[in-house]
Length: 222
Length: 199
Image (cartoon, rainbow over all chains, first blue to last red; front, side, top):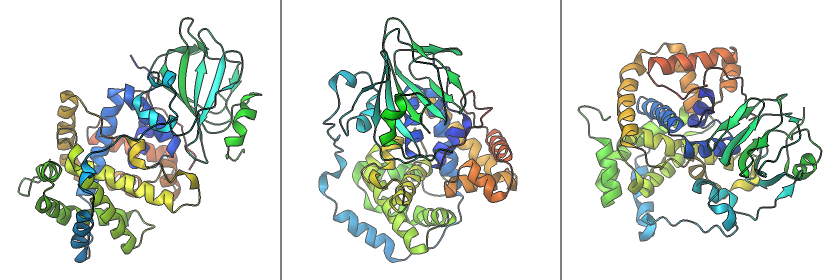
């Protein structure tokens, strides 16, 4: 049972195309687990479709259809067979830990896991975005992170296993929003490691993580 | 989901996918290309020539992706909306100075719209489409304005607030009221949010 979801506002901005890459990836990841939010997004998209249908039509050049058909004629015949691109860097050990959707981002480049403490490691995923850092976090079974607070917003999707903090217990598919200033101290459950996808708006104030992530960060600290 | 007297766009789109039917594609094009152009022009920042470029790009994607279209999941207009939105996102990213290294990532991969849904979802979608169609024209102007800015221009709630010079909370409540009026139920814990994304 998933108890933590993106807000309605987030889903709306997701559907309208206002969000940056990393938040979009985190929400789509949540949708892999959550039928309910998937339905919400389908509804919001339907509103987009209705607005498109009611839109004031703008006359188009007479040639545009003919040009488009010419371009379609030039298409290779096998265009309908969509091939899954190869993911050369996908760690086979991770493969069954992540939703298939994430493979295309995680498998693009080799992952570099860095230890933050004896029980926490992080692997940045480069999607070339300037405002956010996307990363996988792994909490060893029974592991506990140092207490930390957040300078910027953090979005977390639990991919495998579960963890808890002062506010509750989080399971696969849960989508957590940490606001700047929130302090928490997550701990993984005893019997299983926990893997999360996280989106950081600015670095967590924690020695170690900062130095790990800084080369990838292009945020503007306030 | 189609106009009562007009062609059934969903069926035409299915024919494009199953038979590579160019006549069906032509009919869809004649109807949707001017709407797509209007949609993109309302977004601002595009001149008519670029808008047509994007219309063409969108329609070519429609042709390529038509075999994956499932009418039970979404009306043709909804499906085309997502393709047009993704095309616009990619175009804006390509022409912005930020995010230079992301050329190889395209919006279509990020949104992953083609997941199968249950028959139950299909039922909800049909019902939603009915509600939206019935009530969209009854929305107060101020709610419609906010939705138009968000959907047509891809503006965030904060950007809409800045543009209209009203508080972010007002933007959010207008969206919420509009969604209520259209009887669109969104997932829980959507009530309170002060989340503002960096742009």
